[in-house]
Image (tube, rainbow, N blue to C red; front, side, top):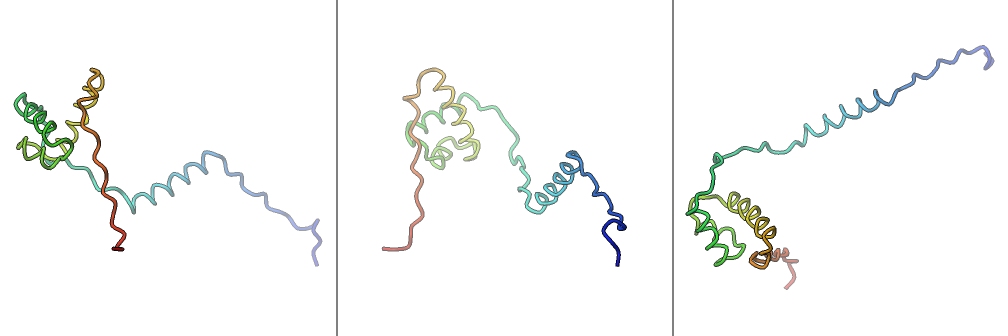
Length: 117
């Protein structure tokens, strides 16, 4: 039987912070590859809003508030995403000019029905 003093103990390798960190990053990278986001594609190239489009946009905001589908129909030349992006920038501009009262209130989100009647 061997005594404890005769056994040679191998020293544990010292793992530095950097090597642990890089391994951790590699593991995270592998995890995110499996559940990566859908690639963003620009369907329509960026175009500056014309004065006529902007005027129709302002009219639509006054008429339909934040009903983006109806605003889109009124403007006629832009997608809902483009309308919402333009509205966001337009509302920020109004706030900076001290005209926040002209910004229509946010629409209430419709809660999912619970199924009970």
